[in-house]
Image (cartoon, rainbow, N blue to C red; front, side, top):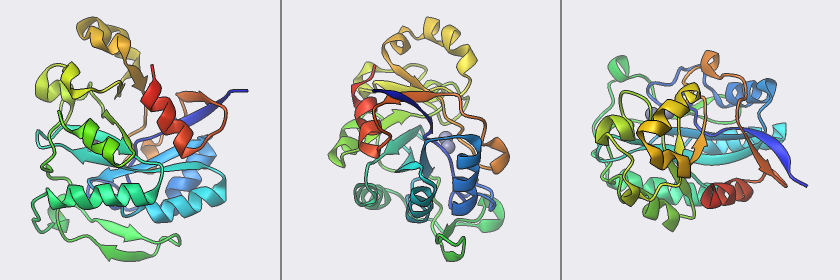
Length: 240
Ligand SMILES: [Zn+2]
Ligand SMILES: [Zn+2]
């Protein structure tokens, strides 16, 4: 029998330069549990390196966890990429990094990029700026992510920056996306009138939290037999 599982598949840790230092692995998992989520993903900008700590803590807390990344395409469009295993996510990350210019981070301007272990102890600081564009184009990203057994969808398409609509003005079918994340879900009707392709897409709503305060209450759920990373990816692959 299928059950409702509440999800948040887009949020940032202290490894994202724009993520608050309070977004530690323990705080992310504890707050997710407290708010009543069943399924969570960590999606830092162009990196996956805080996923192992969050995965460990999520397992202890009984949450289903998906390692992920918010990829910046070459057009600076944000795309959420999710994987069932850290191995797949890490291999994807290595490829992503190979396409990105390595520019030293300026912590005082862009923010800190901290990797933590499961005790919230800093193990490393990433030197290169993480948020800059990669060499992966938005028309190529879906096929590429699939090569790593992952699933992806354009992030916050209704935002005024770093979104499919703000960059291209449209949702080109050639991108192949079957799902999209909308930030202001109350405006989905209006948005679908303008972009009817959205009627044939699965619409996701996630917090995109960069701070604990922005980790809003659960809104959206998947109906699944079981909450496993594979079940979530399969659901997203085959929806709507
Ligand atoms: Zn974004
Ligand atoms: Zn984000």
